[in-house]
Amino acid sequence: MPSAQYKPLSQHDGDEEQSSIDPSRVRNRHKRLLFHILAIASVMYVSYLGVRAIARSSKIGFGKPCHGVHRNLSSLPSHFNLPSGHQIPSVALGVWKAEKDQVGDAVKTALKAGYKHIDGAWVYRNEEEVGQALKDSGVPREQIWLTSKLWNTFHAPEDVETALDISLRALGTEYLDLYLIHWPIAFKKGSNNVLDEELTVNPYPTWKKLEELVDKGKIRNIGVSNFNIARLRNLTANPLKYKPAVNQVELNFWNPQPELLKWAKEHDLLLEAYSPLGSNNQVKETLQVPEVQAIAKELGITPAQAIISWHVQRGTVVLPKSVTPSRVVENLHIVKLPEDLFNKLEKAASSHPPKRVVNPSAPWGLSFDIFDDDGGVTVPAA
Image 1: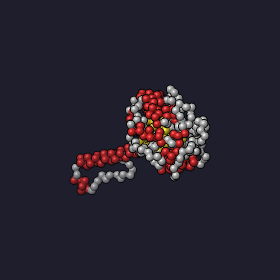
Image 2: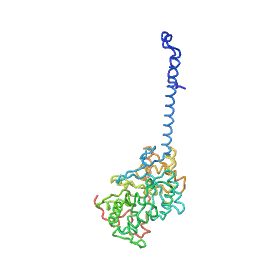
Image 3: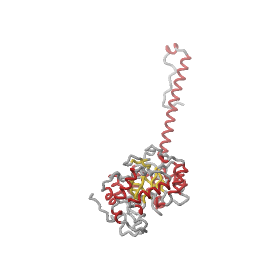
Image 4: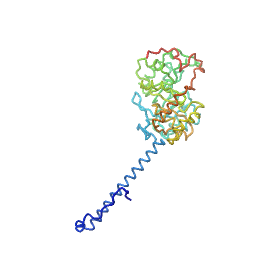
């Protein structure tokens, strides 16, 4: 039925014209006009439905990022660009602390849900199970971003490639998309956490070996993990062939690290957030933060989705971990927070003293704090 805004069509254009026009032609003309009106009304209605669907998808964040598409309906980036030109998916499944016989199912669930990024490490002791799940999934290797990490006992240049090959065999792949120095601490090979002071103070020999492995095609991008600003400046003061693409660190509401984030953006270094919902027993507390609850309620999303969205909106890759299928799926769906809500959450996260949980300085018997001290590194002038 035509909308009320349309005026009724005149049935008569004047007595003289009416008397001279064939009645059958008038009827055909009326039919054509009616058809056009109905067609316009149909297009308007379909357009309305489309806009409403997009609005709803944007609100609840259920648009799944597709391979090669770099913005989803929520306007948050599904990928970030690296100096190499490669594009790393902004949300990954982290497999740290994932139990044996559970991590494989979590990986398969994630890939089925649309994840394109799996973040692991040799020291997690689950790379074989992850590799089997990748094989079983049937997803082509080139559609999955795989990250692993070089452990502390393999920093000696002669040990780096051997360590990498162990991870490659376990994962069932010929190359990694990203390989990170797991900690800025080197242990002597075969020791029980005996510090290798030389390679800890100067990681450049380790880095040069990683650069060689990029040139050999075994790694596409290289980066670091758990490096503070002083250690980053120490490494990047060397004549690097390839700059660190990523620094993976503990980032969450309780430890937002705004100074590190600012420095990283100024130096074209992408941060990745592990323990993004909080470490250990912080997760429940994170999801109950009043600002997080308010955002979730207003946007019709879960508190976890609000936090994960906040991370990506800050410009960081986020690595939520779960082996629960429903949560694995939930964590992928992100939505852009309105600016006022984003700023409110950012302010709340920065308004309390930072609470770092992951700090093995004491258990490793170090005489310095990995994050607060430089451990003897020579830091160039700013």
